[in-house]
Image 1 (cartoon, rainbow, N blue to C red):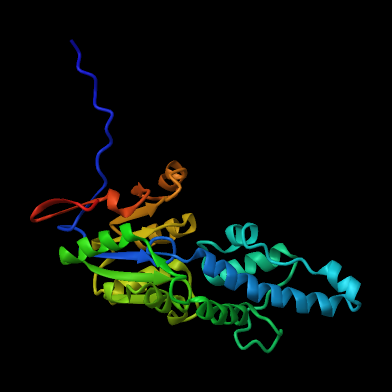
Image 2 (cartoon, one colour):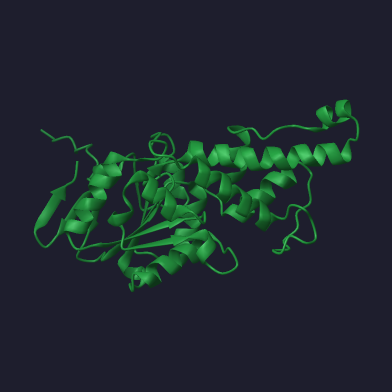
Length: 269
């Protein structure tokens, strides 16, 4: 009598004998701070759009008709979530038919891409109050397991205030290094942030695993040449697409991953 083949999927595993460092995204992987980000983007874009409407449409009635506020759900998800910050700003403004300037000094226009990014950081910092930034317990548990196995950890954020986010969540001491968007010259894309994080860990990308939560980050991580690319899909609905975009492993939470080392396998969850 034939024995049915097992339908159980193998447990996702990180082998610390070949992976000696791990780079993780602050937003979405380590902390649940999307709401605070969205509110900061809405504050800065609404101020910009209101001033622009008043300038282009002189009367109060006209200005009201010209002004369409930032939508924290549609606009944030479509143009900003998971994108390099400057690309996200350009994408949103271009969706409203607004040409963008890349003059970092801000002299050519009242609001350039870089200036909008800096204004957003100010709004974000004011929103980082105790209790508003929450670290995912499963992620913290997983990262502590990695540290117990001697793995070095780096946190990466596209924003200039990623370290402040970690502090607000009370977990800044969990990481050996943190790389923020404002620290990399030229406000470069996510691939440069990941590469900088690996360099600060003094570890070649071939010995590093990276953990991301947004699809646009997958291509950037794959471009760097990390040994393992893990995607966190908390909805449980995007697994196939995330594999297609370059993820080696897709999990709904990091405690679904086992850690294998010299002492055998450690089931984190």
